[in-house]
Length: 354
Image (tube, rainbow, N blue to C red; front, top):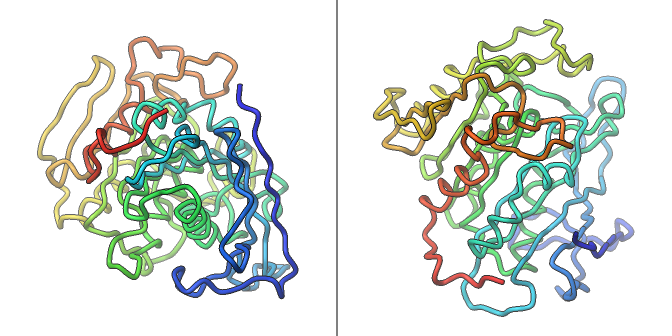
């Protein structure tokens, strides 16, 4: 069990400054660029102050600044290496939290084995019936600016944890998966022309209709996507959901949400990436799982028989998204990490491991 070191860094608004390397967005970094980053533990819980898009949302206005939290796991924190490392961000589901996502996905294990850094952002709860959530692509909030939060979080980790800004992977489950779709659509490219997100994976989330015509959805052709979904998922049904349909979760943002089917979500991404939704190959990593590849492997979706709203391969019975068929289903965490590694420019021999 890790004993996290808490860093809660708060400043008066006048103490914020603009970092030229981060496209004019404001952070709570110290002006001299030095922060008391802990060195004794592998786990760090960090709070940043995000400058929000100050727009009116129904009966209230989004605050100008909002404190947000994320957990960073850096297994090689005691060893120094010259090679900058990949980063994987894992977004939890609605009504969940970053620690549960960490336990569910076990990306700490992959970070240790591969010489990566893993981070687990915490969703916001102030705007949607006091339930933690992400302002994803169609589900489940229109409150917080999670695009700004993600950019600030990446910039912070790149600056202080020897991470390569061109090797950032994202994954999410359920509402966190909706968030990943939105990140693919809206994060865009950095000033160096490289996408903020180099590879993505989604489990049990879909592309939602958070905008009428997807006019702001611009997916980079230099990224990749793997999507996992249970054929028996009763919460985020693979056939899609029209607005107003009551789902199993009695939560107004879910009821009011609208999302596309699995096929429509994947087709949209594939057409954006390579101009075609044709399946180029099919594989069966296990008897229960069928994976279809598109765009010469840059886009892939895997359907798992009998899997409900669960994380494929999760063996922890204490978790709500425990997979009772974990022994025969694909370990989604390893499958996603393998996909990230295939699209990485890093050689494992270059990376520092604990």
